[in-house]
Length: 375
Image 1 (cartoon, rainbow, N blue to C red):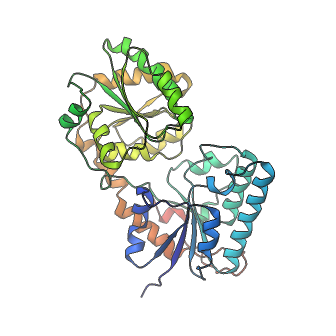
Image 2: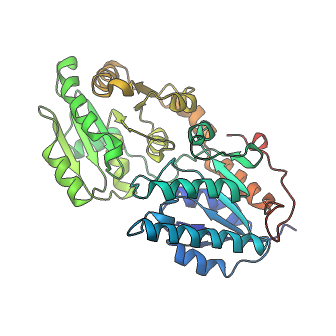
Image 3: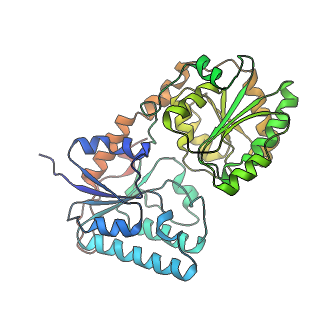
């Protein structure tokens, strides 16, 4: 009979589909997940952990980025280090999932870099999704391959309902001849909306017709004002600058012809996986690590980030000339990122991970090398 265990997850939101998909198999086998939104909550939840349980850190922003200044950031970093030491002294394993190279709203860069080095040292298992993660993070922190596990990002086909394309386009008043470019998700500066707006204006001249911009997602008030003031000239824009519920987001995706994600910096993108889940091609920056991750999928297209506006315009225009991507083109992606397979691998990781033998009170099981996890 397999042992049951408890996992404290930081940060965790009830409506986060990624966390839900990841936890389904271990939860079905009796693993109990305790969500925490803040480090304070994580410390409180960790009081319930005993030897053999797990502390799982996902996004690192809650640790030091909320500090009012560098002095407080240092105090918060020290507090978190004490938490990790306490966990190991009680025989509790630490898992770290590398979602981003740095938080999107980075304020305390020095302390964040120290945090990444601390996690790389103290984590008993480091979960990566993108194959280029270790190389990209190497200037800041070394990821030990002996405790690094690559488990794919799950697709979202079971989380977001698919909508009939014709009905979806009627919602936005789109004709079949119009070419709709969608950008969705939390609207932040790093996502390159300025490049997208300029590219759409250029693409109009290349295409000889007016593209349509579909733009939806939460935006802070100052970003919403900036977006509204800088919408591309000569391009029809349909905007909804608020959080988009899953059932509505499916309508936006179904109405689009291509999803443009001109990120200035990206490691893992749930938006790519959502687009692929709902059978929509995506345009991404052609950085080497992105090409390495998605080169097998013909529905992923690229632009040159060194000439982002011009190259993105050409990619949009080229997409407008292509025939619609058939559903079969997404099959290999859906197989590679099957949520059940991903969750099973995560469950196996939770079952095997043990505190590093050099840590106080730790066990000595280090047998889970990344080659046995796969993508």
